[in-house]
Image (cartoon, rainbow, N blue to C red):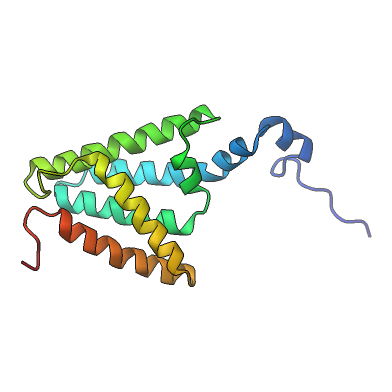
Length: 163
């Protein structure tokens, strides 16, 4: 009995993969695309939330979870140039949504006025890095990232919850 032939509808040939993904960067961006798409969808959904703080907080929690569970996300997000136009589009969407969520929360008085949306990117990267360095199982990294993000969010709030 011979092995079944690969399903040509679902599995591209090796040659097809090499023709479409000519660089390691293109491959990495392709791997990161589903995560970027999910985060963009989460961001658009968060914009519909009528509570600006809850919307920002929820989006940041989903973002940090993605950062500590998807190894392709950090290098793609940090790249100054993109290989694939879709990557550029998704990164622009995420920047736009993140800025809108942050600005809306700040305008509502929920976020300190001395902070800017651009401050979130290095802070979130720091949390993801710290949670990753702590290691452990993915659920442990998520728990650590949540704990660190909760601490950060308390510092972002115009009126801390535990003051």
